[in-house]
Image 1 (cartoon, rainbow over the protein chains, first blue to last red):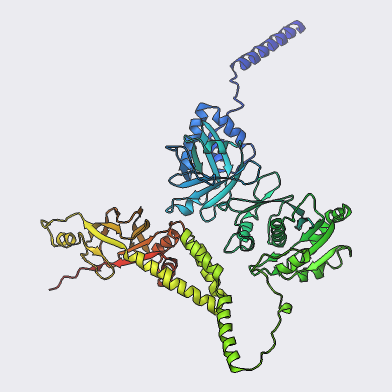
Image 2: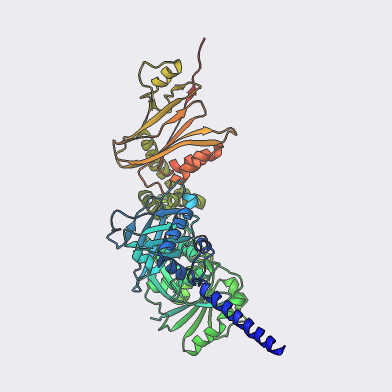
Length: 183
Length: 437
């Protein structure tokens, strides 16, 4: 009787081992870097978190995610500045302007020796002035890479942010192919 | 010459002013937390404190944009104004040095547009948060000076050591005097107790008469708001029409007879005249779809007659009840490039204004543009146009308000805003066609 019990236990353990092996083989590993639509929408609509830039980098490195994010961004954006026909224009005072239908972007270097730039967003679309003035985030896509920066309150149609040299938004400013979105 | 270091207290921190940078006039002045390049929430208030017409730093020093870096957050209130203002004055006179200072100044107070220092709240909490830092500054061999409104100094009397140099200052030039620096020219404000009265002159009639004439001329000369007029011309030229309105209102509020009259003439003979000239330079004609005489019905014939009709306040066309689809040909006879906005307003069922067409364009002298088609059909249809040789960023908002206005008072206000800043406004209304038996 005891021999039969041992055999049954061994057979049971073998069955459990086989079951575990099958589960392990068949289990589809979950992509740890996967970003769902809900996450993408949260990055666009808010609330913003510290990990958003990291997630934007992950989105930028994934072709499908990039397309999906851009489509979502276009559907949610308050206004955008599409690709430029030519590079941005520079004035004698060193200011650089990037013009669009809904808003202009002006880049003004600080006079201090600290590689700081002031970027001003000036709302141009008077018919949607109030609506556009509610924008809180500036997104940019340049060379397939997304970046974002929070916008301070738009007062009298102008919002001003400070960016250091080397910031991706600054590089995108000089790229005629870059597209800017505000939300 | 002594070098100074500025500390601006808050109820949570003692913020040291670390640097002042003169920036491009096109940027908005900003207060940054050191090394973060993050604008602090008081930045908007600081920009208004710096920039004309509300700001005093540009009035004092002539520059309109700065960046200030501070060592700790300053997040709300206006008590930073005295400290920031003194820092600007010291910086302008090369006596501001946070690293090599001989004197540490602790300053709190609001500064009004007349350079008067006003008392602030929570003075006891502010001195408590700064106390250790000030003691450390004193131990480092720096003289400590405390500056605040006289009312605040009374509250501080028990909280500060006797060795500290404490000054109650009612005006900015009293604060400058305490620091041993000069207030910029033309901005010296006198305290009531420093005003002296002149003695009586001998009573000879001729002398009195000439003295009266001289006094009158001097009175007009002294009270003439040269700076405000110069600024107003500049605002108008630069298209800063909101700033222009604010400057005009500021002068009106001062109730200075000479200044008020000077601005009255400025408004009537320059701005309103310009508005009127621009309005007259606008030529609006109607174009209809049926322009030939083969029109079938009476209505078509009436509508066809509208084609080429000049729209003016005196020459209104008659329109049938069913309405006429028209476009407007808008031409500018102005001598310079202008921006024109034209809108047609109807009324919805509630009687509220309903914009059925709005169209605008930048046009050069002699150029013209044609609007989309719109149906004008009764006496409720109103055409409104505005024209200006300045960018419409400042005035398009007023024009939009005018389109939405449903009471006479608001209409009058918006038209006044536009015309009193030199923008031409044109309005026309069509009358219904009444068939006679």
